Image 1 (cartoon, helix red, strand yellow):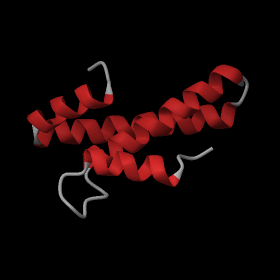
Image 2 (cartoon, rainbow, N blue to C red):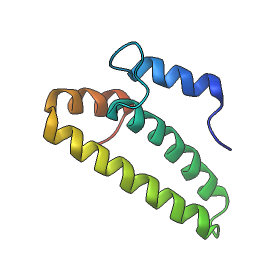
Image 3 (tube, rainbow, N blue to C red):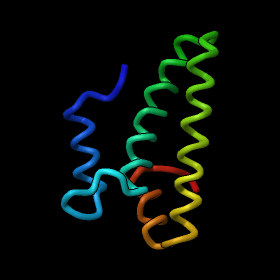
Length: 89
Protein backbone atom coordinates (compact mmCIF):
# COMPACT_ATOMS: atom_id res chain seq x y z
CA UNK A 1 0.00 0.00 0.00
CA UNK A 2 1.51 3.34 -0.99
CA UNK A 3 1.91 6.27 1.34
CA UNK A 4 -1.35 8.18 1.75
CA UNK A 5 -1.53 11.77 0.56
CA UNK A 6 -1.48 13.34 4.04
CA UNK A 7 1.63 11.46 5.15
CA UNK A 8 3.35 12.23 1.85
CA UNK A 9 2.63 15.95 2.06
CA UNK A 10 3.74 15.93 5.70
CA UNK A 11 7.10 14.42 4.73
CA UNK A 12 7.50 16.92 1.90
CA UNK A 13 6.74 19.82 4.26
CA UNK A 14 9.23 18.54 6.82
CA UNK A 15 12.18 17.98 4.46
CA UNK A 16 11.75 20.61 1.77
CA UNK A 17 14.50 23.15 1.18
CA UNK A 18 12.32 25.99 -0.11
CA UNK A 19 8.61 26.77 -0.46
CA UNK A 20 7.84 24.94 -3.72
CA UNK A 21 10.33 22.11 -3.25
CA UNK A 22 9.16 18.58 -4.04
CA UNK A 23 12.20 17.04 -5.73
CA UNK A 24 15.28 17.87 -3.68
CA UNK A 25 17.42 14.94 -2.56
CA UNK A 26 16.24 15.38 1.04
CA UNK A 27 12.58 15.00 0.06
CA UNK A 28 13.31 12.05 -2.22
CA UNK A 29 15.32 10.24 0.46
CA UNK A 30 12.59 10.81 3.06
CA UNK A 31 9.89 9.42 0.75
CA UNK A 32 12.05 6.45 -0.26
CA UNK A 33 12.82 5.71 3.40
CA UNK A 34 9.11 5.60 4.21
CA UNK A 35 8.44 3.22 1.31
CA UNK A 36 11.41 1.06 2.35
CA UNK A 37 10.07 0.81 5.90
CA UNK A 38 6.66 -0.25 4.60
CA UNK A 39 8.12 -2.90 2.30
CA UNK A 40 10.36 -4.21 5.06
CA UNK A 41 7.32 -4.76 7.27
CA UNK A 42 5.52 -6.43 4.36
CA UNK A 43 8.42 -8.78 3.71
CA UNK A 44 8.61 -9.78 7.38
CA UNK A 45 5.06 -11.09 7.04
CA UNK A 46 5.40 -12.47 3.49
CA UNK A 47 8.88 -13.93 3.23
CA UNK A 48 8.41 -15.58 -0.18
CA UNK A 49 7.25 -12.45 -2.00
CA UNK A 50 10.23 -12.17 -4.34
CA UNK A 51 8.84 -9.41 -6.53
CA UNK A 52 8.44 -7.12 -3.54
CA UNK A 53 11.96 -8.04 -2.45
CA UNK A 54 13.29 -6.94 -5.82
CA UNK A 55 11.37 -3.69 -5.56
CA UNK A 56 12.81 -3.13 -2.09
CA UNK A 57 16.32 -3.72 -3.37
CA UNK A 58 15.79 -1.20 -6.17
CA UNK A 59 14.49 1.41 -3.71
CA UNK A 60 17.45 0.88 -1.39
CA UNK A 61 19.85 1.31 -4.32
CA UNK A 62 18.13 4.48 -5.45
CA UNK A 63 18.26 5.91 -1.91
CA UNK A 64 21.94 4.96 -1.65
CA UNK A 65 22.71 6.82 -4.90
CA UNK A 66 20.85 9.93 -3.72
CA UNK A 67 22.69 9.87 -0.39
CA UNK A 68 26.02 9.46 -2.17
CA UNK A 69 25.23 12.46 -4.38
CA UNK A 70 24.24 14.55 -1.37
CA UNK A 71 27.38 13.60 0.56
CA UNK A 72 29.55 14.64 -2.39
CA UNK A 73 27.81 17.97 -2.94
CA UNK A 74 26.97 19.16 0.60
CA UNK A 75 28.23 17.16 3.57
CA UNK A 76 26.35 19.27 6.14
CA UNK A 77 22.97 18.67 4.51
CA UNK A 78 23.82 14.97 4.23
CA UNK A 79 24.66 14.60 7.92
CA UNK A 80 21.55 16.51 8.98
CA UNK A 81 19.36 14.36 6.72
CA UNK A 82 20.62 11.01 7.95
CA UNK A 83 20.14 12.10 11.56
CA UNK A 84 16.57 13.28 10.86
CA UNK A 85 15.57 10.21 8.84
CA UNK A 86 17.22 7.82 11.28
CA UNK A 87 19.79 6.08 9.12
CA UNK A 88 22.93 4.51 10.57
CA UNK A 89 25.64 5.94 8.34
